[in-house]
Length: 109
Length: 114
Image (cartoon, rainbow over all chains, first blue to last red; front, side):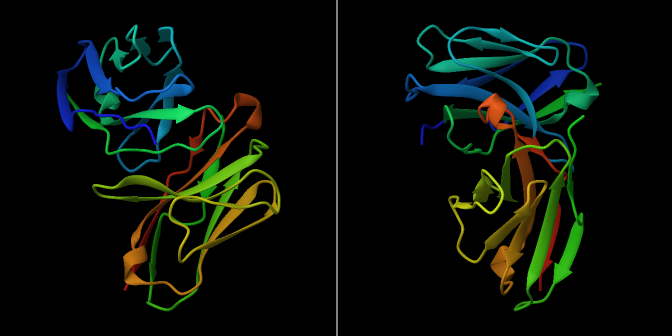
């Protein structure tokens, strides 16, 4: 399975943008980049995914490097409710997910 | 909103007991999954199912079995619970129409085996 590397933890101040990095230097051409997050005492929830181009949705933006060896999840304005573990996952189309340990994001008021 | 529900949030069982964990989804999704989550190990896939009466082994199926008699329900069975099966168990579903890109998770069942 293709692997991702994320920082164990990050801190952000409320109402400021947050950039969560993910390295995936062994990515292959068919691997999609997915981000999920897990709020305390809940199951993971989908955030965003992409293949080659940057993606935006109501929750976040995904910036993918030109060589696809890294990506960044951008929360434009962090709120206290965004405190969670964020998982960056590589997945070939149609195959199963492999969740790593993720990045624990703390949001300070 | 998609809803995935799990029968219990917390469960305490004794070693050797047979344990049933139930998962129900209300969005007519074809695909359903069982994961376990342990500190430092992330989520690991136990079993999944692409259709009624179909099942496929995930990465760690040993000690578990599953049942999918109806499309909306996917059960995880611990035939003889052991202490190393103490964990958080998460169920998920996804529609085939989205190419498995989006999985919807339940709240989890925290199982303690004594």
